[in-house]
Image (cartoon, rainbow, N blue to C red):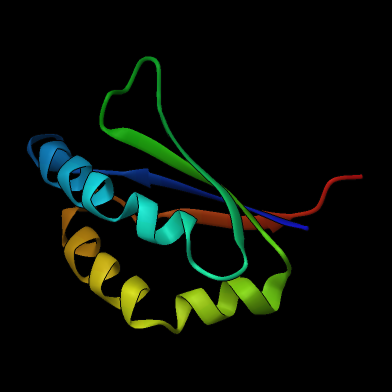
Length: 94
């Protein structure tokens, strides 16, 4: 299993737009082939920083999602809302 973590810092007045887009698409992402889990976390002190935490069967499944029309449509809305470049990494449980 691959664990994917993406930390995103948004322009403060764009947080609502991000949350609307996430809410509209979270079940589609959760049901995407190869995705076993998806959570959204908000930083306790900086309310414009969010992290997605997801579980994927493997890197191939994650890449299939990243190449999908679903990802492209979600990312097209999300990307312009960033205040900083997102930080992403993949890990595995030991």
